[in-house]
Length: 324
Image (cartoon, rainbow, N blue to C red):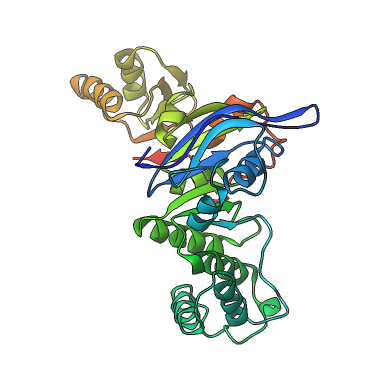
């Protein structure tokens, strides 16, 4: 387990008769982003609370930062940082005072605490606001301060529980860049999120949690390939070219009014090359080729069967199609 930041086998947790986590297995390599997705109430936050020592598990072999969670929780706490769904920022004091308070909690000397505080305030673009009460900060600024406070103790693993919920698109993208920079610096990030595009953008591996169990896990591309429905759409302006293409490509659904063909295709390089070779051999050139591939929305709804009731959100203005 030397190259694993987190390893969980058979993780179980119940509250009374309600089974929240029903024997899940997770492995997170060091220096990566792992994203846990699931409908509201699926157990994502419970998993974060257990792995960050805030709540005890009912069963399971759990290792975080190489330490047995049950046998040595203090060593785990020394290696991790947690940014929860709700801000830990104290609005009655300044951003700088929030940072210095965290430095005191980590038992840093006053000199070291001021040095770390100054570095992190600059890194997170909070120098100008440092002397102002945190209550005056925007949502994005509070989130940046939240993560900066988490980094005071130089954690190797950070749990981010829905860190961008409620942020505007600009602040969300800023947070994405911060997460990427953390991972580039060797930090491991365990991320839960309501935004499927966020997991797609950031995560090296994704697990979908449903009814207390892992429905599927893998890279975003591996998960997308699990779901049928990928196709290529060819559009023509010449009716003769449209009819010739329909004969050349074989299996296809045609729209004579739009002069468009829909051909099942997984969007892979090999499948696209095969299709284009058939068109070239027949001397046919489409006026427009559009690749439609399943995205994480399709994966999520197929695996959870909870379309429209999940509380999981698609980020606006993110295209699902690639026009070539």
